[in-house]
Figure 1 (cartoon, one colour):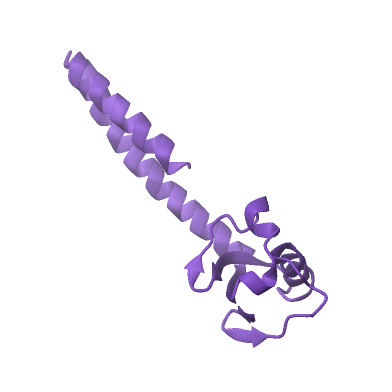
Figure 2: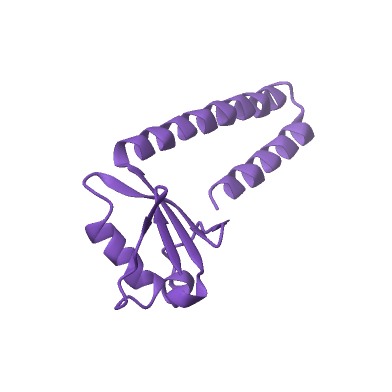
Length: 126
């Protein structure tokens, strides 16, 4: 098993047996002040749910190469705000289209656009 944090190879303490053990070790001793994990890859595959029980309980020897990216919290917050702003602009544009369709008494078109909008937006949050 190999561990890399922000491109730097680190040894894994032999007392650590699961991803949860290693994650706690990384967050308490290796990340540095004001940083948090922004990305995790196991054998090159990004794992978005790396804090969920399915992954936390996995033995380290089954994970192969582990790559962790840590970023300053401030950068992550700025990125999230920028993404949210972009999302809100597209949401606003779509809602104006729905409102215009209702305003012009195109109820079927408006309801269809509203349904599409809700389906698309709900998927965005999953």
